[in-house]
Image 1 (spheres, each protein chain N blue to C red):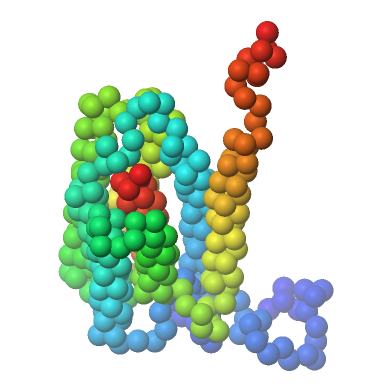
Image 2 (cartoon, rainbow over the protein chains, first blue to last red):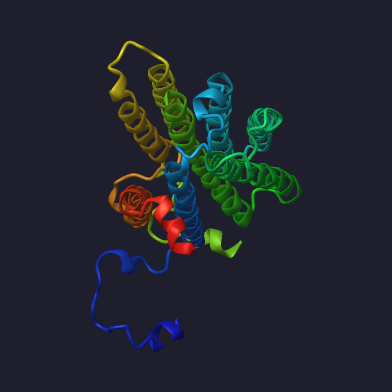
Length: 211
Length: 129
């Protein structure tokens, strides 16, 4: 408290109502807020890739257009996987708050399986595009496509690694407060990936298939 | 852990945290979110491949449905709401949305104009000689 009184901006005798009154926020709020800022800056980074894709989507260099390449059925399967995994991730964070280890591990394992299913469908799609001569070096459109969708795929891969780390940490250390904060951040990350995927399947696949 | 016992008056929430709630209501929240997201996703996939609606309206409809679904995800999965205890999270989100709109809208605007204002390609080639 000596530090607080040494604060030159601290005004004695005034009772502030509102935000400053309760003292410093708990570490969970500070951590979550900081991670929220990171997620927003990640979304800003994605918006640059989206802008590049939107500008370059017509520059096919006489190569294949999106409507000739995209298979909406596999995109629907990917979307279903990611949406369900977002739901199981939510169940996992409820289980973590309730300190139900078995339920938590089960929900996280389901989330992991759905994330891996998403990744395998996406990798198969990329492999078939490259095999058909529509790799990232074919045209500016395909470069932008592989950059945007691949960057999201990289994020999902990192998320799966983080998910496995959290399962191991809960097994080894239990639901300590710092582990709970990491689970909060992981859940935020995973839900944010789903939000970005909504933009990807709408802008890239559904709009691209109609062109 | 020391920071666990230190819980000030709950005047704000971390993003992703909900207020006080029973497990059943929390699960129900995720179920409602999932249901809304599925409805919106199915609608936009349906609209993309149908002949039933006026064709030029399809891109607009897909964009609108996507924005609605992002809203559903934000509210039901990330628990970003407009409550008074969520102000900081919403302000950060608003700033993020501003930057995203500027980047995407600005890029499209500038590039569309550049194409019009550029010198035709053969003249550029002539100048380089």
